[in-house]
Image (cartoon, rainbow, N blue to C red; front, side, top):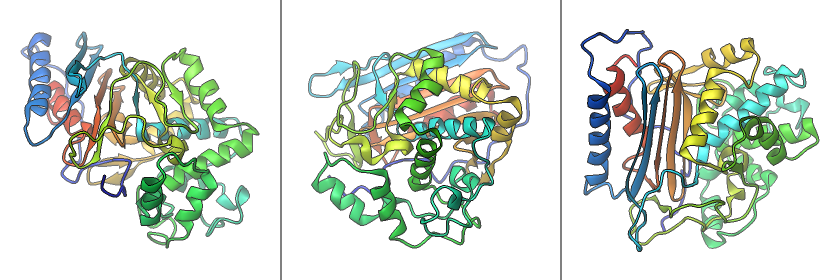
Length: 373
């Protein structure tokens, strides 16, 4: 395997800024059958592209306004045994986990246990520049703190000892051994280190472990039976297929249960299924986890980027909100639009730099709504 520097995928360069202008569906718009056929065709085109090497995918589109509830599988879940993809399998959701950690942080804001403008020094005064970094900066990736998973020494250790159990403070030690990307609060850089710190703050404020807090606050209210947060171990719970590759196509590179997931912790160690991820993102974006006022702030407090927006542990794509995630063997996207009353979940059982689920999401959105999605 090649060295791992960017284990969580967020965007690809060519994504465009999506318009949020609402456009009503006309009477002569394509029928649902035609729309589904187009969604299937672009999914198949990705699977059939000889240069992509995607083993399998699951695509889910639920548009309640149009009356569409479509879930589609293609390809294989297990290459050597040629087993078909299964829409009920669990998979690692990578950085989609960040939205869960962020939701718990915001719930603690609602409960009056912290403020978004609190300085990090209130909780961890020994951390570098903690007197100028705010909780909001940790949530929206503007702190400038180095991303530990971009550090060569992290990748070297991970590859040499893939089952090593990482401690959050150990991950941050790597991060703080590197210079900040920019002066605090003056730029944007996606960094897993920010979310690791948020996880530690949650544990400090609740006097409880992060796993328990996420389960009680996120999973249990929705009765999610096949979704969980992993603190350590290589095992992927539940019925699942295999996950392949970690950036480059390498035949036979099965990484399903190769790395101890403690390396990702609050930033990306959760797992789920397509239908349960649908339930979660609909609650997260639609409301129900937070007060109405804080929910509106979450949806509107965005750093505008060339490819959309990034906010309080949340990605914006036009009228859709959610996140995406990638870790060795797995990549996924989850987005919901309150305006369109639509949810899109896409999962590949691979991690490849040349194509990620967000690219397919944009094609889906264009089919369903045109450029103004």
